[in-house]
Length: 294
Image (tube, rainbow, N blue to C red; front, side, top):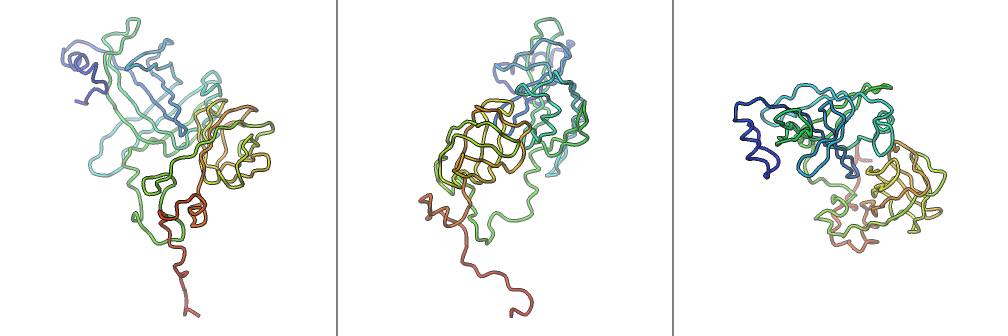
């Protein structure tokens, strides 16, 4: 038997499952977008929201999921989900299907809970829940005007790495702001100006050219609220930001965001951030020689 996720209700959950009485089950979906916003849906087929563990789960779109299988070893288990939506199904005030077409689920994580109820009598009290599956979105496919399919891979997918942790390269091996880098994250709040597209927009930022290049932009308001995108380039003139991947919707004037300073992982950039002592690149290694070496 799976362990209940909420210690406060663990005893009641186990008592219900061991009682031999009839009980009801409901799927609870928690989708965390790559900017940190959490979308919670339930599949109870009722219009009322459900509450459990201090969180509210709203009536979601039609969600048809495949069977959940458990695999031994490090083989990656997957869960296929088909989501049917109407224009009334929204995320951050935006229709769900265009949101998916705009890669709004890139990098999202999904946790599927199984909730237990004594009955379907209002107010639909969830006694407890267990985690049935969790992982990250690895594929979106078959997107149409009314539905799309999504593959969620278990966390063992992170083991699909074809090289060791250390290699010889010119660029720094650290991730910006990780424990090896040691720098404190530099976040700057800003707002979008007019005339934005899904990949480029002017802002009120005034930092020097390249300050946010290879950093991260996270929207805190507007249709893209809760989403993050890598910054491809930044120029001081007009505070122009270009994202590495398009947003689901063009940002509106005044949409707020936080921008994380980036790093090109070069010796020069590390020196500019007064962190050369922690630089882990090898920029002076001679280039590879092919052929007869002439």
